[in-house]
Length: 107
Image (cartoon, rainbow, N blue to C red; front, top):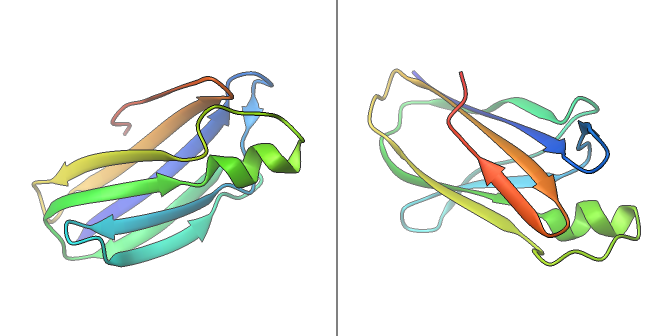
């Protein structure tokens, strides 16, 4: 069973980014799952099911930064990734700041 999770950290404050809306879409752009990061900046089980192919995580960073009245350059971050193992775990962390971001495949 495919498992997709995420964790968002605010690199400026050094704290988890709580309240970030996240959407998971498939290759055709259809929404597969949606969630909002918890107080620890996590969505532990955004998607569980059988899947393979191209997916995109869309992080609504505008909503997050607006809550703190912070001007930011990126209103959203979209991370495309490929599910090659339908029984795999796919953890996609995001390190976020108003003018930069980075991501990687976590464990």
